[in-house]
Image (tube, rainbow, N blue to C red; front, top):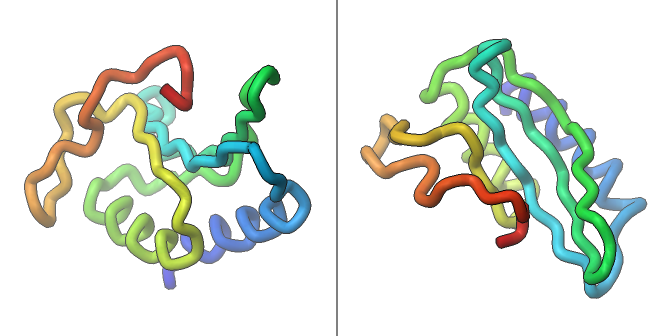
Length: 111
């Protein structure tokens, strides 16, 4: 496990212990922050009738798709939540050539 994955896992596990509830939808949002040249990870939760909460987990400063892919593969062993990608329009995974972001980002994070 690389350092960024360890940080993500520690922060996620700390949040998950205190936040797990029924009838709440959870997901991990990964954002390509082109201004800072980083990948930002957020833990999002949505309860029906309430606003969606987005809690920052970690920013990866190494802006390389290969490194992001490796980090995500390792982090998916920690959590099986849904992953949503933003600002990755037209970018592809180097390992298999699939599009990273399949649909345009919407205003509703759980759409």
